Amino acid sequence: MSRTSRKWILSGFIVIFLALLAVSVRHNIEYQLGNRPDFAISKRDQRVKNGIMVFSYHRILNPTGLVKFDEAVSPNTQFHDFNVNLPSFKKQMYYLRSHHVKVISIKQMMAMAHSKRPIHGKYVVITFDDIDRTSIENAFPVLQKLHYPFTQSIITGNTGWYKQGTKLATWPAIQRLQKRAHGLVTFGVHTNNMHYMVDHGTPVFNIPSNYTRFTRDYATSQRVLKEKVGYRSPIFTYPYGSGDSQIQKFLSNQPGLKVILTLNDGIVTNHSNLKQTPRIIVNNYSWNSIKKWINN
Image 1 (cartoon, rainbow, N blue to C red):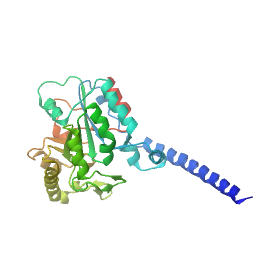
Image 2: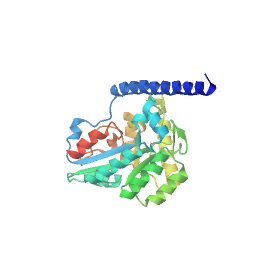
Image 3: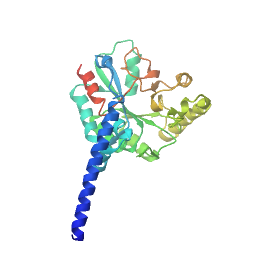
Image 4: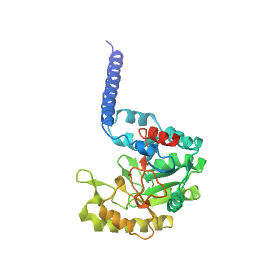
């Protein structure tokens, strides 16, 4: 057998091995996903006819060959829970338009929720956590074309960092976005440097001994945001979706803070407390339930 033939045979074995590995890992991922919450909104919320749904996005990825392969074989939940491919994101945005769901800003949501008048119709607020660079490079052109307002929540001390396999936008990129968006973008704070977990999955700011540290971190995040974009934000977004009662009380008493974004279930109405604003993580698993709400 020639050397060339041996190389071809070896290459064939490698391809078959990788294919079998991909199938095996994919089957394992599907099993794991089948045993985790699918992020779908509750059947009760799907039946709500009038109100505001707040979307939570993280990364909007171009579906390159490498991205598709990672999605197929990686057990990393980041790929499945917090990533949306750009074609899917476009379809979601145009689906809202074709079904006459109005996309509004957080400022508009505040006015509607604080009004004594009932909300009629369906509305959506679009938010992005962390300000991953793909939310600027990929999502923003779509939102700009449709003239959809959106909110970016910034970890003010982590800009430009590689974090959990993704790169967060730099301050120059954020400032360019602010100029290009012409009022479409609003910035919120997402802590300065307390967006991580300790002790087997506890958000660091929810540890009681870190309470004073959190109050200082919050003040720093607002100060840094004002230095970089020109204002303190009326919006705080919880890392990991919620805080304990002590943290919630502190934030609720902050002057100028009007909206606290959580990952609690629910639809915003004129009876909602915006200092416990519910949101839905949008991904391939939750979108079908969102469509049921839209079409109800």
